[in-house]
Length: 274
Ligand code: ZN
Image (cartoon, rainbow, N blue to C red; front, side, top):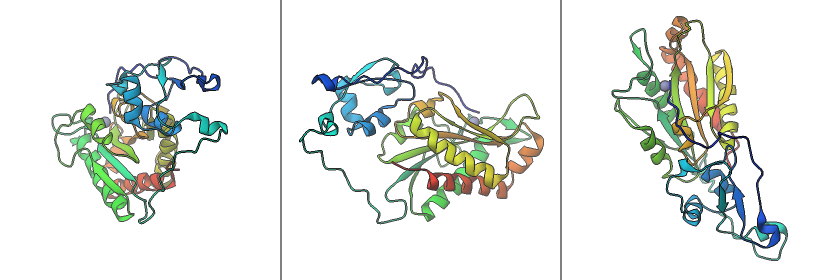
């Protein structure tokens, strides 16, 4: 289970990207559905902090569709074939497998927030089981990791996102188990809020279905707080339904938790990390 933010990004239909650079004016970008400061920074070869400064953005969650952003940093002239020398691009480090990429692992809920509670099992506990296995696997594969919590304690959604936003070259994976009133509903699904998160979500969902042999509920767009407030590609994986008795029994086993962790790790490995 998860909670929704009242963010205004994504409320309206997509608007056109406006580049006034062609007229020799300062370059701008009109915010459209799925845009995050992180994705825009990558696209326009600048940084999140420069974008924030140029537009006096204090709270990135308050970016609106249709809002005109001034683009700082590297001139888009370079892209348009002028003689301007493009800024040197940083070479990614390949000294280790995973090349300095960091996965922020977010075990959902914790402390007084149990998430779902079914059959005497707290969702927050299952989330942590999968998260710790995932952390172990990713470290073995050479990725850097960070956990938004390591024990059974409450951590606010904004704090989780803020932690993720401290890192560069990161992705954010929130781990949950699902629950609904209809006890026959089962399966796994993965949520995203931005375009970069979408391909990560697809990659993870594919591996979840393959490895856990769980019903495929697909990838879905949702403006969950942890997805909208994180600047990097972010997904929320619902590993199975605790409200379905047989699925809950499976989810409670170590083997299922290990399979889910391996599936998420494989999904991350196959994701085209830009
Ligand atoms: Zn949850």
